Length: 113
Length: 114
Image (cartoon, rainbow over all chains, first blue to last red; front, top):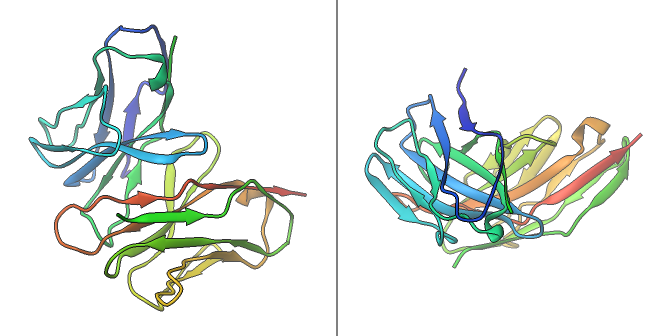
């Protein structure tokens, strides 16, 4: 089954404790992205990757890091989480830009206290 | 830059009512337009799309027509069901080659009551 998986689905952590949210896709997609969803703000892109070792900032990259060492994986790293990073996070992948749809993971609900 | 404006929600309808969710966009050139749906507790999934002017996307009884002259892509359904309760996102993707950022609207929550 073609899918994007994320782990964990739910995470409660404390300020400053490093964490990683994993993302994996099995569709051999070139493009992958991370978004955060907040009430009233819709989806905002954090980082994206066009291929292995190629990543770039989206609209709200501060406080986040990513890496793309393998085509299928695109982990999101919060080195020192803060309460304003409490949000719902989605990973997405696509064949390309333009007409190609994005496939989304199920989401990770992160709470930073 | 590009932008997508959706009508504010929530929208509450009775079952079998007619649905319209407005979406207008600002972009240069001819972007591709999408509607994504997010059911409770799930990620977004593609509902329909249109890639050029006057195209009509359709799926599961939902329709939207790409109107270049009014820069709009309104979502419609003739008779909603309780199972259509979800959040709907309008989005655009520029046509130009290489990676181009997808721009999403803020989402419109639809609640359908029996």
